[in-house]
Length: 234
Image (cartoon, rainbow, N blue to C red; front, side, top):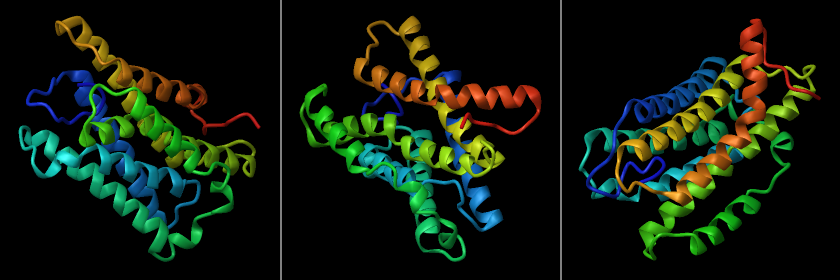
């Protein structure tokens, strides 16, 4: 099935796009952890987005305790849950890191405005009604918008630096968005090679998620081409 469904079913389709997507996702997490731990600060990072990702992974990977069909999938689930919880712990409780978190820059969008619509959508657009399926579907919709607080924080910090985004933060956002783009290629490949493969809800959510990143992708790639820092329009 669809997105990062690492996976409730017995068979998980693997291909180069799926694997690249998974490792781009891992790379984004490693970049973020390197930034936080090496610099002992979380400036430019949204705690709200990180908490949303905890919710995404916990609701998506409930089968962690009973589904052992794939060691690869099981390890990925453990990594995504544990690292997302660890990042929130660092940002909220560990000094001097937590002292560098700017709540004022991360207060533009109440998370309930993201969680509530996704919870309702998961009740309406769902393949079948079961608690695990509902939570998995909810996680797909929530992941599509979980980056919004982070993008708002990036823009808020850029305003104070002539529009420039700190390099590690820009690499983190790009690789996080890049993973979703690779998953879209994975879905296209599966449609072309797997008879009967369809997952409309996942595809639409993934497309929305990728569109949200497009503006940032443009300025990131523009900076990469010129060899400079990512600069956003003010």
